Amino acid sequence: MKLSFVVAAMTTFSAAALPAAQVEAADAPVRIHAGLLIDGTGASLKDATVTVQGDRIVSVESGAKGPWAIDLVKATVLPGLIDNHVHITWHFNDDGRADMTKTPREQQGLKWAENLKKTLMAGYTTVQSIGSADDLLLRKEIASGDLIGPRLLTSSTAFNDVKMSPDDARAFVRARKAEGADLIKMFASKSSREGGGATLSAEVVAAVCDEARKQNLRVWVHAHGDDSIRRVVAGKCTTVVHGSLATPPMFKLMADNGVNFEPTVGVVTQNYIAHEKNYTGIGNYTPEAFVNMRAFVKDQGARWKTMFTSAPRLNILTGSDAVAGAEGHNAEEVIFRVQNGWPAMSGIVSTTSRNAKALGLEGTTGGTIRIGGRDADPATRARHVAYLGHLPGLKADLSSLENLDYLCGLLGRRPGMAIEQALATVGLAGFEDAPARTLSAGQRKRLALARLWLSPAALWLLDEPYANLDLPGIELVNHMVRAHLDDGGGALVTTHGAYAAPPVRTRLLALGEEGD
Picture 1: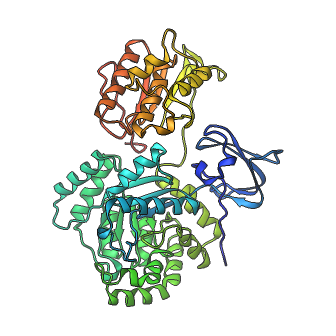
Picture 2 (picture 1 turned 60 degrees about the horizontal axis):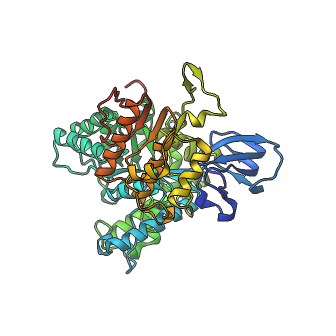
Picture 3 (picture 1 turned 90 degrees about the horizontal axis):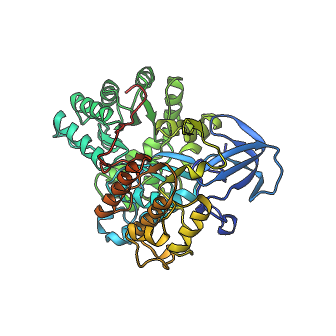
């Protein structure tokens, strides 16, 4: 059985995935006609129209009339796919070897950008890259709009030190939290190429996972055999990765204890074998290891059937463990599973809504905006609430003055405030006539802050307002928030860093899992 993915509408929609002529403006609605829509939860709808605005699917209709920006009447449309386990910074050097240490940093950056684009064009709009501190930089650049790629979550550096005590392990987790990691990656066993035996004590595994819960971080644990998996389950960790040597009782143990399972059966080992010459002689990629991998792959289909049939309640996630050579081939993980007995819809659900839930991205909570004790009129709500998000919302070919004049015409302007005055406030005096595309990422953020300063809105919603700013820029944001509060306004600020400290009527909310 061959499973084909035709991805045209994405949960996190990327304008980069469309021809430029089909995208008139970042916030203009885009209507997509689908012959068949699969929603990622197991349901489907024929002759559907999906309307996307910005990075949101705002409506799905059946039988709606055209015109459509994109007509896919003969295609199947899916939500953006999610890969819970990639290594986006892995690549082959100019000699074709999987040795990243021989690639200059500037060339590494180009390789990373290539990997991101290949992954996005394969239909993956969210990936979780595990094990490299370089992912933090890539996450920032993607979020700022300066780099094309899928939404990126990262663990930064992985925990893999067998000499660390439980207290050391807790300190490691806190350090990853401080630098903005989305999760913790832990190696609790050797590679399957080395027999997969446990490497960390039960006490250290438990310490990592307990501290991660306290820090509101998930834990993805590399564990191949029964001995390491028992320790992961006992430590109440989030997810077991690989489990290639596990027995059926371990699958039931994970299911009974609510531990997710992310087997990697369809991409990673096959990719190593396909690129044997690129890997042999590096680290533990020995000739003997490749003999073992070939023997292992022969039984992979039967092993996978045991995994998904042994414990029906086991929450099986989808991660490819894509390394150098596998970029853009992420979907082969799902194809292999379906070719070896998994229902096709299970593969789609696992790679969309189930993965999203495991990553904490399963949806948003609706609410009502009330101003002055009454619901805000939707027609004028934009003048009551000012939003600043990851993307600056600027027109690249307009100058700084033209951008602000245009936005003030749409959303209103604070009485008595001149555009030139706002630009000076944010440190952009002298850049009035500079096109937005010529500004640096930090300057574009300052231009977006100037728009915020000009806004007459009483409520500011600021999502990561410190991104792309230097220390004076961070202080500028705090100064603006303090002044806005002093003027009777309100602000809701979300940030991964401990930057916000305006000492005026401030409440700090640490958001974690439900029940924490």
